[in-house]
Length: 574
Image 1 (spheres, one colour):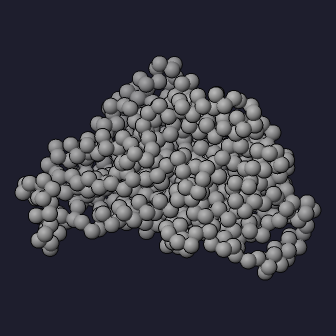
Image 2 (cartoon, one colour):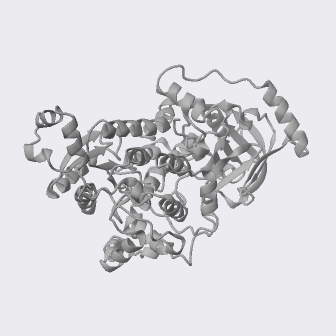
Image 3 (cartoon, helix red, strand yellow):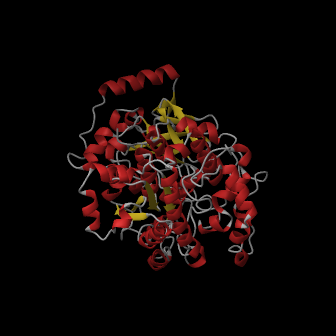
C-alpha cells in the first residue's frame, strides 16, 4: 500500500496534528485514512435539509472501517424557491461556486478520499465537477426523492395549476391546496426533472453504489446506502483508486444512454459537458444527439410519463434501466465498487435486488415493466433529446422532443421576440400570442442574465390546450427539468454575444424541423425568402446591432457573464 496522502501532509505541516486534536481528534485518528465528507446540507430546500442525517451514517461507516471522517458543508439554493424573481439568475452560477468550494476544501487540506452528498439540480453536478477537479478516491451519496402528495400530487404540477388559476380555470382555494400538499417530505422533487436526472447520472457514471440513486428519502435503505458508502470510501483510499480511474469516456456514454432511456432533463446538456470538462474529456450537444438517435426510451415517470419519481426505485432504479439497455452499454466500464457495470448487474440479479424493490409496487398493483418498459416494448425508439442547428442556432440548440406534441415536430412559425421572460409570460397570459407564433425570449443566456429557467412561461404555454400544440418557445435561456411542450432552449451563440437570436424581428419566419435537426430563419415580415436573401438581411442587422449594457455591474453574476462558455459546451466559467 502506498503512503496515504494525509500522512504526507502531516509530515509537511507540523500544525496539522495539533489543530485537528483541538477539535477532538485523537492521536489514533491522526494515523487513520482521513475522509472528507462534503455535503450541501442546509435549510435551503427539502433536497438538502435532511442530508445531515445521511452525513451521520457516512461517518459511522467510515469509523467502522477504521477511518476518520471530517464534515464540510457548502449549502445550495433551490430553483423553485428562487423562481419567479431575479433569484433564479443565480441558479446556474451557484453550481460552479459549489464546485469551487469543493476544490478549495479538498486541495487546501490533506484527505485521502471524499464522500460527497447532494440531491438536487446544481448540487449533484457541482459535486461531480468538484470530484473531477480533485481526482481523489471519491464516492457519491444522493439524498433521494420526496414522496408524492395526495392523489400522487407532485411539485411540477404547481406551475400549470398557477397558470390555470390566473386564467380563471381553477379557484384560488384549489391552487392553495395544491401548493400546501405538493412537498410532503424531504428529498428531490418527485418527477424526472434535473435533480432526479442528475442523481441517476451520478450512478450511471459509476460513482455511486449500484441501485442507490433516487431512493425514496424516507426509506431505511437510504441510510444503509450512506453507511455502506462511508465504509467503501475507506477502502477506496487504501486502494488508491482515483475518480479518473472510474470515470472515462465509456462512463459518459453509458450515462447518456441511460439519459435517453429515462427521458432525462435537458439541463443535462449543461451539466454532463461541464463535468466531462473537469475530467479532461470533451462532450457537447452533438454527443447527446448522436447517442440519442436510435436509443430506446423506457421510463414512464413524470413529467413526460405517468408516475411520480419514487416509482423509479420501486421498479429497480438505474440497474433495472441498465439491465434493459445493456446491449447499448459499455459493460466493461469500471465503477466505484471495484467491479464493472456488467459485474454489478450480474451480482444484483443474484442477490434479489429487483424482488426487494418490486415489493414497493405491490400496493399499487404494478409490475416493474409498468414503470420501466422492456427494451423490446419502448415508449419511443429515437431517444428523447435533439440538437437543432441552422442560421438561428449555428452552435446548436436543445429540445426535449419526447415532451413535444407531434404537431410541433415540423412547423413554420412567426417570431414574437421579447428581451426578457417577464414580458413574454405576460403576453402569453393576456392571450396576445396566437397559434402559429414563436415566442422568442432572448438575453437570458449565461452572459445575458445567468441563464435562468423559463419555467413559468413553458407551463403557461403547455397548460393551454390550444397554444401547447400550436406555438413554440425559443430561448437562449434554459428550462426546468419539469418543463414540457414545444420548448427549444440553449440557443447558441446567445443574444448577449450578438448571436442570430438577437437579430430576430417581429414576424420573421422560423422553421422548426425536429426530425431534420433544423432551426432556421427562412423569411421576414411573414414572407418566405431565398436563403441568400435571408443571409444578407441578417448580415445587415448584425452590422447595426449594438450590445446591451451588461445587466450586472458587480458581484458573482458579473464574473459569470464575463467568463461563462456557450451553453452547448456546458455553461461553465472558463
